[in-house]
Image (cartoon, rainbow, N blue to C red; front, side):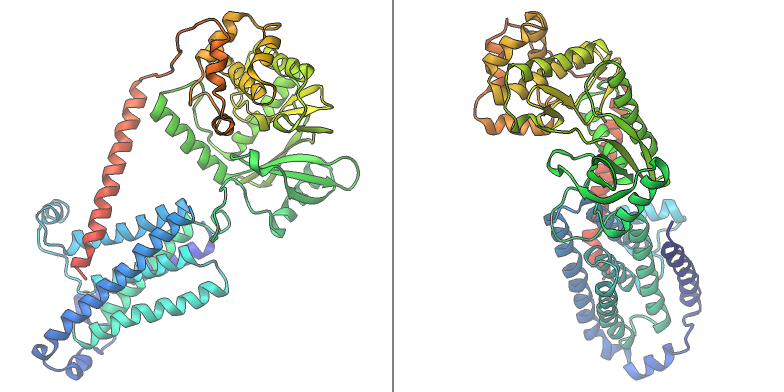
Length: 516
């Protein structure tokens, strides 16, 4: 946990303790009575109190609703989830502590043994401070913008605190400490759950898998490659980002020798892999090996192992150079050769030799007892217009099922058909595969088996290549993959429960204006 998080945690604990003491004693600053005398009799303050509540509600609404919509627009989903969870959680606590609804009173009775509200007049200030600081953290990067943002937050919170204190709605000490508690809670959660080095605040849509290769990160990469592989790297540049969604591909220019290719993995990619596999289990059941990786190290080790396994099995893949630890436990680099004189299949001249070699690689995968699981045009390189090299084996699997192997064949057939035509591809395929194998491969084809890039290219092509390939092959019943298990049912129930809890928190958040 970063040092800033520990500091905010200490501030939060101290503020909570002081707030409890202030609430019980009535004052810690000795100013409550003086301000009450200045404000005048309570009957003179009743009308203004209503205006103060309306103003606080408007400020609360004006802050969080546009911010949530803005985060959706720029597709910063991590920030959105943490933001909504933070403000909804605090609003839910306030609602449960001071609300008067039947359900709220019942829950409060179960938790505290009495249905009476928790006495704290400054709940509105606490909630408003939480929303203000959470908004600051998700909208501004660290540095000068955030420092100016803190001044704006202070003005917004003071605009709510000063009228409430002057009208006698809150004591000065309680109001100030409530604001500190809300601010510290929001800052702590945002610092821990959205660290800026992993989740930078940006104002343009970006693929979250593509980490920013700034000067600090590239410096760490060059130093780690030099120390662990003995290679002096001059520059680290992004490379073929359009074909990658699960890592940050890089080109390493070396001081002596040819350039190298590298894939940078981080905790961001580990989280994405876990979410991806969870969604696949929920939608289709347990398909092949959908177990999530325990760490970034295991994620990169798996791809390095698959490269060596396929190379030893005769499959043409980039020569692995090794794994580099950039930041222990957080960032790792898989380094391979940069395949010389190679272009992607979709950008090459595809002759019979290319089609034959592409299908031969699938046959070699079968012989090696492995599956690629991500065969698409950007992962099939053509070298010297005759040889095919398979890249990006991070999804590779050892000892797959026959269904998975058939899906690899179908993906290769369709990738080649996009540039060479289905008739020509199937004519060449019959030289290496039987009609039954080809028909079975096309029978497995569905949205599940097609990688996203291949699915989009087939849709944009205009021709129904899947239907055309099936017409040219013997009829075969559709092979569907749906597996029900106790694990899948439990995950579905847990997910439904999580969604329901989120909706309840959102509802409490929307109703929190009643407290303000």
